[in-house]
Length: 330
Image 1 (spheres, helix red, strand yellow):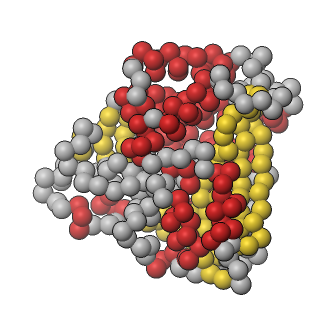
Image 2 (cartoon, rainbow, N blue to C red; image 1 turned 180 degrees about the vertical axis):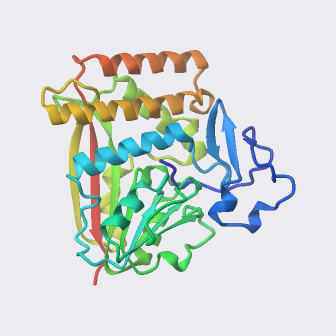
């Protein structure tokens, strides 16, 4: 998913702008989705957003959007039993906000279910569909910019939702504090994130699993320093939210197989979705091996080991997909 990240001047980057208007238009004058769609950057055969340089390390092309759609279906159809969130906001919400909305799958589905609600999806990448329910609107903004407060469009929200976002912002405490301020009294914040490390079926940490090795490579190396990622943050979320003044803080955790090894049909299906998601995520990261601090050969080797581990039904690894939701006091 395309998430929030940190700003900077895009001129002089090694990633080439593909805009036909780059030499004649000062893009800082524009904030619309139509304008932001003019600017993309290509690197190693993948397309990236070019509006906020240095903000997010994953692509925004069709392959990445397909991965995000797969993850959306895994969440809504399996983890949430056909629902889109857990927070008890009632049957008549007026404003629902999705931060780091990516291609906009979640806002579109939520808007169809709650036609009376104004549903706002915000992202740094302008890849949302031109068609959507009439109560959906999309914004291209960098909500992780410490120097610019959020616009008033988010204020008074019944629900602010994030998915795979908190781990990729540079200042998660400020990001969450601003979410708190934009909720209406009694409104809810709901964060869906991956709780690592990877574990084996017996509960031991899978330190030798190639996926876990990639997590540590991302979290501890130059990639995280460049983009500000903090993959191990989610377990701290309940205490962070408590310190901010949130109440009614709750958690839900679902172990998902990595691969097709489970004998239970539903878990095996989740494992298949998870495997496809992880393979695409791994490929998107390892193609930028220089940002991970490894050689092309090391990246190729790790990719091969990942594929082999996922296809090995004797390796019973699990990921913890967690949800933390909390209420702003009345």
